[in-house]
Length: 142
Image (cartoon, rainbow, N blue to C red; front, side, top):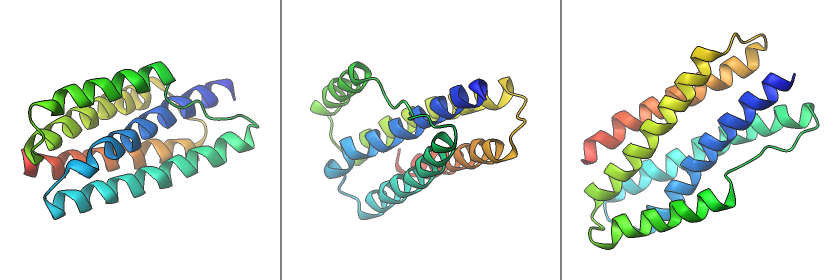
């Protein structure tokens, strides 16, 4: 059970970071197709976050999201990266970098764990396939 909670928290942070990334840059996107992609990404992340939260509720645990210091640092870094170049290509590249970090983290989770709980394994697979889809779609804009 303790291991499941640790895995769920790691997954929750990946999803939280994805939602945060979209929220930070979507208002600067000009291409309506890229904007729709990002809206759809955020919706899918929210669904996965809800699934994770349901599991955490069963364990009577609150999910641990992104550390406020990490969030603030991410905000600053995003603003600095976009200060000189706010075009859609730069935004897509930055989102792609974040997505790749998520893929690496979720792949590590998948490879490290011997999942006893099939539903948690399904969440891992769902998140990984979502991230891989997002990666493929974002590449169209760089």
